[in-house]
Length: 135
Image 1 (cartoon, helix red, strand yellow):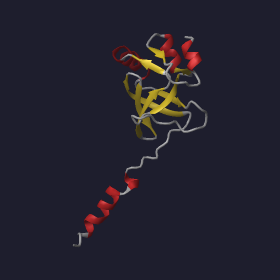
Image 2 (cartoon, rainbow, N blue to C red):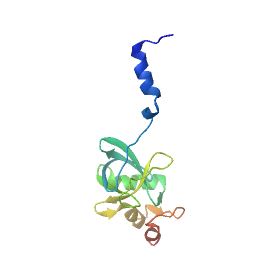
Image 3 (tube, rainbow, N blue to C red):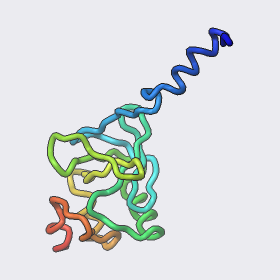
Image 4 (cartoon, one colour):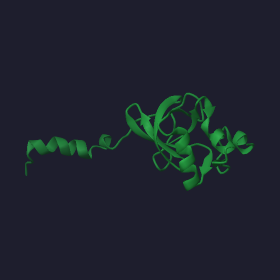
């Protein structure tokens, strides 16, 4: 059976492995404008793409943190930082980039801990773990 030519190309594109690959990377020191906050996940725009970022090293309670973090950063620009300089920022199992976030020249995670909005995590080692724990 022969298929109409106008169906062949879309089917090849739809079912090719490259159609599912997302090779978009976020480098250290990337700027992002925040559009939404949900607990310890920030959603924003990087290079015209919607991106979700999990705040590295923090645990935040849902209702309290979402409102307070939104007041701080929603609609504003932040800088994403990797836990190892000059490497692309890695993703977690929920397809979120996991990064430290700088806001107005300061570490947002440290600020959130100091204000009592979030607490530092101790279940995963990361470079700022000792600093977060001492706040």
